[in-house]
Image: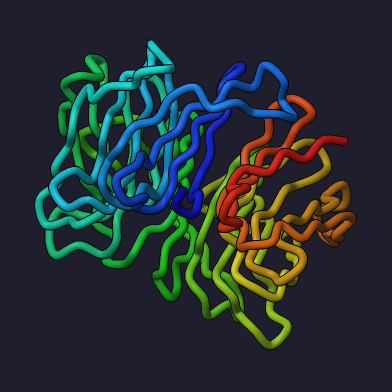
Length: 306
């Protein structure tokens, strides 16, 4: 298959997306009845790169690089035979880079656009008929989105705003309520995760001993503070956090998987790393298992257990 790009785990299923995969699919459904030995149940062909996936109920939302089909909604009620539920074409946009779902809305982000913005909200009360609610313009590429409550956390390429926080309580009129410029980091914001008032933000490779993983206190979006950082020494494509630790999907040779101890968030420390035989591209945490996607042809999904 093509290189895996992202993974979402819901219940006993893993949902994996890949780069363009010839005449085969780019969206796969895996059974996790035995979590350490996933079994493919179904696949779906988009015909282009699929960059991210978010699952809610019986539907998967795919952020794709297919022009005219930047967001694809797939009915997964029958895991062995996923089908198209809806396709969203965003004017002036060639691809969607990340996607998240919360309640009755899907949120996705795009590269810098000539009109309409890089952050979009659609009403999915009827997943087969997504309805445009609004777009928000940052004037830069937006690589990651994470929704928590009434706030959207975005990672961007904007020089002075690698983190942007939006109030999305009114879906037709999202408003910026906070931003943060990572000191010294010249690289773009990459992936993002939020929990317990803390934003976990990663960047592309910075070099020169400058970190690629940041913990930011953001419970007050108007007063965001840097808590701590860790120098991965290469691009970090994915992050997910648990209590006292975080998982990083990186491009660091021989250490593509990293586990970081964040019990003292001001001084995060690497406690474990693993060679995945290819760049790590995404990560999902479910119960006591970590699921990583990678560019390792033949083993695109890696399962890590304690």
